[in-house]
Image (cartoon, rainbow, N blue to C red; front, side):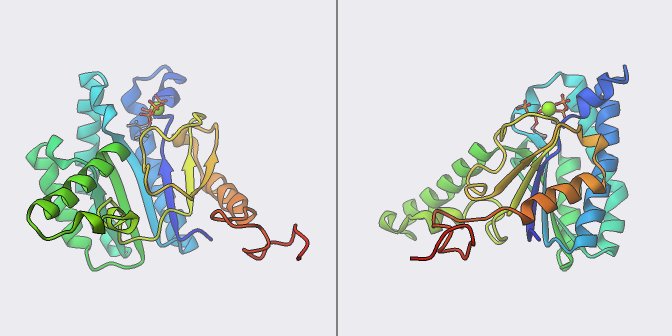
Length: 242
Ligand code: IPE
Ligand code: IPE
Ligand code: MG
């Protein structure tokens, strides 16, 4: 069972276009699939779920789509937080918040404060997020400490950088899921996915159901995670011992 699941929820636009509806209808349908995915993780005892909701690059989409997504985001923050809190979900956001309006930023902060004590599931929404942005902000934070005399540049190693990127206090994602058929990372968690198992499906995000997510978990259970070691070292059975 993965402790931490990271998901690129892709295919909303195509889902709507296939029905000859505006793309925003697909995003609305996608929001329903988000609830399904959260329910699934709660049910399976997954400890952390990180969802890619809006990338750094998505800001460059047509203004009406970005506006529609912001409205949807605002509405979801208003509607869902009580229920998430009740179910023991801790809500967090990662990404460049400076690009959101004050109203959205305030709602995000409120959701985080409100659910801070919850432990059943840590739900992280990546919004206005990019893996490159994440690594850049971690580097900036280290540089600030060096400039202030609090940090010796010689002490900057992988662990130091790891401690400043998003999700630093969570185990790295064990399993990555991308729906929508594209076989790429699209600037999601570049640092954190180094040894994550990747799983792709052609299904569009609004069409995802519990059986899809279960198929990903079943596949994950069959993977051998070697982290650079040999199969024998990690206790695999497909290699003869010396
Ligand atoms: C993912 O669906 C949601 C966001 C990026 C906000 P898309 O909107 O990318 O849907 P497709 O890939 O165009 O079908
Ligand atoms: C990735 O999907 C971002 C989110 C799902 C939020 P995109 O649709 O933006 O990715 P590309 O453009 O196909 O790489
Ligand atoms: Mg897409």
